[in-house]
Length: 251
Image 1 (cartoon, rainbow, N blue to C red):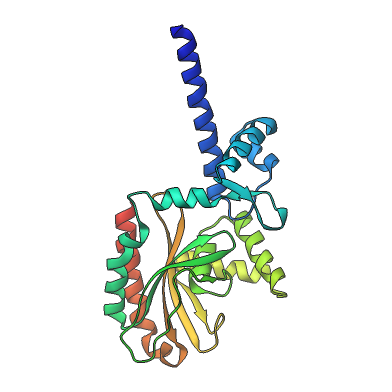
Image 2 (image 1 turned 45 degrees about the horizontal axis):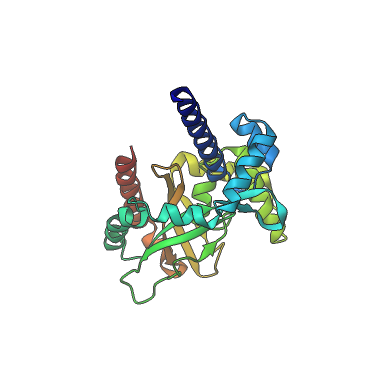
């Protein structure tokens, strides 16, 4: 009887470990993954992965990706994550406030989710003319400072499909090699720039970082382009100080 209970216990633990491995793979993937891709990454038979994902789908922990492109994390996963004691918004709020005090400009916090940047928090600037985005708004990757900053931290094999996908959706014919060189510069210097690329009349500078869970986030400072030249140096220095503080808290 005891041997049977031990065997069942070990079996249950193995199932949980395998399900957790599948969820981690999907969390790290920026686009949908097929059963075969998941199976290869976790080192399990495709049939086993299918049984695991079917069970997870019943609990809304995984769902089908848009246009049938494999599987992605489901809404229940986000709900459970949101209930955790750790909250990136609370963690970064003081740093955003300090950034606004140093620059007088709006400070934004966003997270990379799939094919876009989702705004999580914002501290408005003190100037009469400021740039404001809505929390929950989704911005593109290739034309925003926060998006470029995150792309620059990804391996090329992950960044290229995201770039090409965004260009394809928007009918853009871009030079991928030149764009990758720009991302290498961002990775080397630590700051990414949007000079009227996403919205006319608005420029921005930002940096990216990974939290304890490995999720990519970005803090950026958008500014009316009419004020950019005068503010650029101030914003760069303040962002580098903020990046150093962020690095210290996540090390």
